[in-house]
Image 1 (cartoon, rainbow, N blue to C red):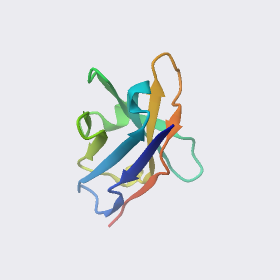
Image 2: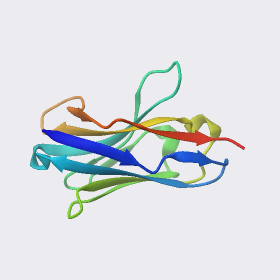
Image 3: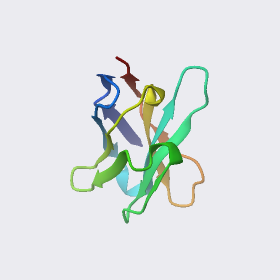
Image 4: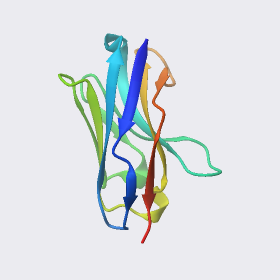
Length: 118
Protein backbone atom coordinates (compact mmCIF):
# COMPACT_ATOMS: atom_id res chain seq x y z
CA UNK A 1 0.00 0.00 0.00
CA UNK A 2 0.97 3.60 -0.58
CA UNK A 3 0.11 6.55 1.63
CA UNK A 4 0.26 10.17 0.47
CA UNK A 5 0.06 13.02 2.97
CA UNK A 6 -0.12 16.64 1.81
CA UNK A 7 0.80 19.73 3.78
CA UNK A 8 1.46 23.41 3.18
CA UNK A 9 -1.93 24.75 2.17
CA UNK A 10 -3.43 27.90 3.60
CA UNK A 11 -4.66 31.42 2.96
CA UNK A 12 -2.54 33.73 0.84
CA UNK A 13 -3.08 37.08 -0.83
CA UNK A 14 -3.08 37.42 -4.62
CA UNK A 15 0.47 37.55 -5.91
CA UNK A 16 1.74 35.54 -2.97
CA UNK A 17 3.44 32.16 -2.84
CA UNK A 18 2.92 28.79 -1.18
CA UNK A 19 4.78 25.50 -1.27
CA UNK A 20 2.86 22.27 -0.97
CA UNK A 21 4.54 19.06 0.13
CA UNK A 22 3.48 15.46 -0.32
CA UNK A 23 5.14 12.81 1.83
CA UNK A 24 5.03 9.33 0.32
CA UNK A 25 5.24 6.13 2.35
CA UNK A 26 4.58 2.45 1.77
CA UNK A 27 5.32 0.64 -1.50
CA UNK A 28 6.85 3.70 -3.12
CA UNK A 29 8.84 1.75 -5.69
CA UNK A 30 5.59 0.99 -7.46
CA UNK A 31 5.00 4.67 -8.25
CA UNK A 32 6.38 6.08 -11.48
CA UNK A 33 4.56 9.39 -11.85
CA UNK A 34 3.66 11.80 -9.06
CA UNK A 35 1.26 14.63 -9.60
CA UNK A 36 -0.80 17.44 -8.16
CA UNK A 37 -4.48 17.89 -8.97
CA UNK A 38 -6.93 20.49 -7.77
CA UNK A 39 -10.67 20.73 -7.38
CA UNK A 40 -12.60 23.95 -6.88
CA UNK A 41 -16.17 23.92 -5.50
CA UNK A 42 -18.62 22.70 -8.10
CA UNK A 43 -15.89 21.78 -10.57
CA UNK A 44 -14.15 18.60 -11.60
CA UNK A 45 -10.74 17.58 -10.36
CA UNK A 46 -8.09 18.68 -12.87
CA UNK A 47 -4.41 17.95 -13.19
CA UNK A 48 -2.06 20.78 -12.27
CA UNK A 49 1.38 19.24 -12.74
CA UNK A 50 3.08 15.86 -12.98
CA UNK A 51 6.62 14.59 -12.61
CA UNK A 52 8.00 11.17 -13.51
CA UNK A 53 10.68 9.18 -11.75
CA UNK A 54 13.12 10.54 -14.34
CA UNK A 55 11.93 14.08 -13.55
CA UNK A 56 10.06 14.76 -16.77
CA UNK A 57 7.45 17.38 -15.97
CA UNK A 58 4.15 18.56 -17.41
CA UNK A 59 1.97 21.50 -16.42
CA UNK A 60 -1.53 22.72 -17.03
CA UNK A 61 -1.51 25.79 -19.26
CA UNK A 62 -3.09 27.86 -16.51
CA UNK A 63 -0.09 27.41 -14.18
CA UNK A 64 2.85 27.36 -16.60
CA UNK A 65 5.50 29.85 -15.56
CA UNK A 66 4.02 30.21 -12.06
CA UNK A 67 4.08 26.70 -10.54
CA UNK A 68 7.00 24.29 -10.28
CA UNK A 69 6.77 20.60 -9.39
CA UNK A 70 9.79 18.80 -8.01
CA UNK A 71 10.62 15.60 -6.16
CA UNK A 72 13.22 14.57 -3.64
CA UNK A 73 13.57 10.82 -4.03
CA UNK A 74 15.81 10.55 -0.97
CA UNK A 75 13.08 12.09 1.17
CA UNK A 76 10.19 10.43 -0.70
CA UNK A 77 8.58 13.84 -1.04
CA UNK A 78 7.04 15.77 -3.91
CA UNK A 79 6.67 19.53 -3.87
CA UNK A 80 4.58 22.10 -5.67
CA UNK A 81 5.98 25.61 -5.51
CA UNK A 82 3.22 28.07 -6.37
CA UNK A 83 4.12 31.68 -7.17
CA UNK A 84 2.06 34.67 -8.29
CA UNK A 85 -1.08 33.03 -6.96
CA UNK A 86 -4.44 34.18 -8.30
CA UNK A 87 -7.95 33.89 -6.84
CA UNK A 88 -8.75 31.29 -9.50
CA UNK A 89 -6.07 29.04 -8.00
CA UNK A 90 -8.31 28.59 -4.97
CA UNK A 91 -9.09 24.88 -4.62
CA UNK A 92 -8.38 21.73 -2.69
CA UNK A 93 -5.05 20.39 -3.93
CA UNK A 94 -4.50 16.64 -4.06
CA UNK A 95 -1.26 14.72 -4.35
CA UNK A 96 -1.41 11.66 -6.58
CA UNK A 97 0.70 8.63 -7.48
CA UNK A 98 0.47 6.58 -10.64
CA UNK A 99 2.07 3.25 -11.45
CA UNK A 100 3.89 2.70 -14.72
CA UNK A 101 1.29 1.82 -17.34
CA UNK A 102 -1.64 3.33 -15.48
CA UNK A 103 -3.56 6.06 -17.28
CA UNK A 104 -5.04 7.58 -14.11
CA UNK A 105 -3.72 7.97 -10.58
CA UNK A 106 -3.72 4.84 -8.45
CA UNK A 107 -3.22 6.67 -5.16
CA UNK A 108 -4.54 9.92 -3.68
CA UNK A 109 -3.78 12.06 -0.67
CA UNK A 110 -6.49 13.56 1.50
CA UNK A 111 -6.13 17.04 0.01
CA UNK A 112 -5.06 20.42 1.33
CA UNK A 113 -6.99 23.67 0.95
CA UNK A 114 -5.42 26.62 -0.83
CA UNK A 115 -7.31 29.89 -0.68
CA UNK A 116 -6.14 32.98 -2.55
CA UNK A 117 -7.97 36.05 -1.34
CA UNK A 118 -7.35 39.59 -0.21
